[in-house]
Length: 176
Image 1 (cartoon, rainbow, N blue to C red):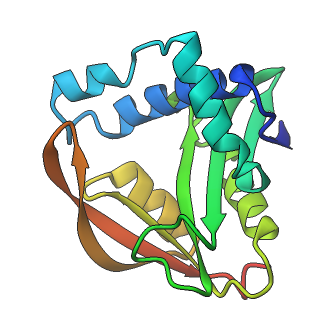
Image 2 (image 1 turned 90 degrees about the horizontal axis):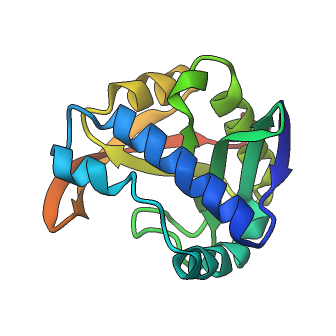
């Protein structure tokens, strides 16, 4: 497995979109309606990919891709400073996304990506926070096994519907 930073352009944006769709559909199969899940399998247009790649380029410092035998199998996306969610404080970072192809779950890719994201954080970051849909047992087991504690709850809107979320935090000083 190789970990590398996001490279601006549509190739990495397409790979992230593909991994996201596969993992999202599997992890949330029992939590979201079929029509919502089906929307995560759509192949974006070249224009949509260019726009997405341009947005990701500004956060390139915190986006990592995991490749196995030359194919992207997972990615992690961490942010700090401007542009984080409301539950992320000034000395904290947000794990925006961490997805691995379901066929590769349990192979250490997610752990390696999480560790790389943690290594990237500036020294002043004291905590890493994340939000995921409540009921995502795969995510809950993964994060709790790596020391995250559930610290709150919220809601996230998907396709016009509000879904309950769980907020988790990890003290980063002990992870570096």
